[in-house]
Length: 226
Image 1 (spheres, rainbow, N blue to C red):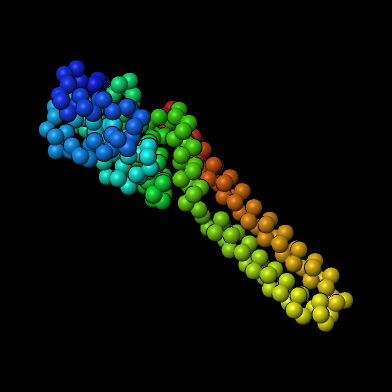
Image 2: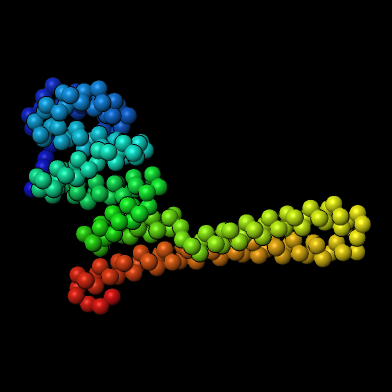
């Protein structure tokens, strides 16, 4: 079922339509101030306001409030079979924004699950794969955490070496300064290598994991092995 904007317009709805579509804060303010009147509107008008409100919350970065409201839109699209809304796949769009809101609020597990669901629905949608990869990457893994810990440990050790060099070696054992300079330089280089290596490996594993999931979904749809 396709749902178009209503042809009949109530007074509340006309006031809403006078707001510029890009004035997201004004849309939010209007909805919050007139919520009781909006709830009494015909469904088509109410739904149009609700969608605009939910989109505005997402655009201005009120992700937690967005998560409280977006499920309502998703439920309506399912209950009333609203497959198309003003030429848009509203269900897919709202689910994508919900995943991104979870991502922005650091709920990486929920974000990952939603993006996997989106890939199952539309494997050809490249953005869903990118978002899945990002949710996996920002969540971090053991390799990334260990590489960062090792890097920080080496930098801390290099700082100790520098302190010993300045306070003890240079004043009293100048002939050994070269060894300490070499030692702290190597520690710094190894720390950078550990950090860069861990980050690159984590990025590669995240990309590989997202790509593998996409191949699995496509294989199931085509009934071929992944």
